[in-house]
Image (cartoon, rainbow over all chains, first blue to last red):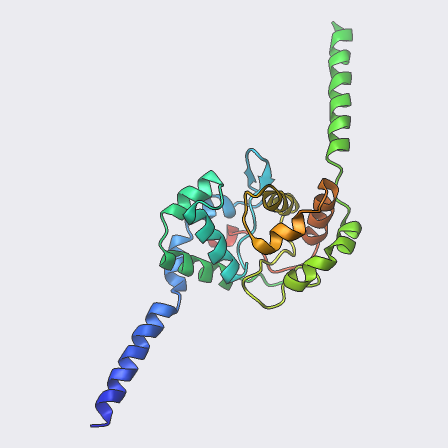
Length: 106
Length: 115
């Protein structure tokens, strides 16, 4: 009798955990697109000219904020806006978690 | 004909000289001095304070850091905290800060290993 609520609670918890925890493997698959620019050492943006940022190992929440800003059009970089617009909040979460997990051994 | 070529070359050199004056390279030591206010969020050397909402700056590309600071200054990037700090920065300050953080050791990398 006591077991049923416990099972229900456990089930609810695991669903919540699934919804919460970012899927870094899904992020890895999505991040393949990023390598087109961010995977080429010293790859340079045109007009204005600057090297595209190093994003491997960057902090997760900052990456979420940056991608969300592109998604909403608050950051204006044309290529990044185009990428950002196609991403769901969950995609952004997963990509950010994957990128943050890549820490360079110094 | 030869004169013309050397005239063109002289003009080109003069222009290059002007350009390097206009975009004086950043001075990392000056940047370190100016980075005091950045430390509260970005850490002493740009390696953060363990709070994932603030980006790591150590070892980031110098020209990208300068671009980002200018974007905050112009309002192309909206961030309440950064807006306040960049308001007083000169172009030289931006170059100096970018040079300082780009020269620090950190964990940032490109995605070349993950293609």
